[in-house]
Image (cartoon, rainbow, N blue to C red; front, top):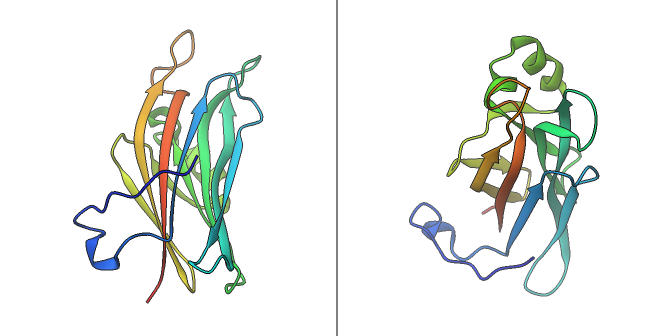
Length: 157
């Protein structure tokens, strides 16, 4: 879903974003993987960004997601930048953090938190708009019931 941008004070000096996207994971979407193309004003492809499931906890269905990958691909960069957004329980588990670190920098998910991803020519701010943990027999704050992320993309200057 593409939404109209509202420029915030920390983003004002960059001007309006090239693109702004909203994505929501809901428990039960075991194949969740959302991606968006980033184009300039002329419609030329610059890259892609998105979010997908990185890791789960426990067994059975639906999957209990404890970590997501947020990524940025830039057609002008040889590397794709990835950060791993983790539940409170997963982030507090050093072994799990170490296991996920090769995928990208591990970060604690927190409502309102802004995550920055940068490549050679693109800058993304990913903001956690809303999140809810699931409940049940697993440890408290160990998996997500819902997570909504807003991705705003700018060309680096």
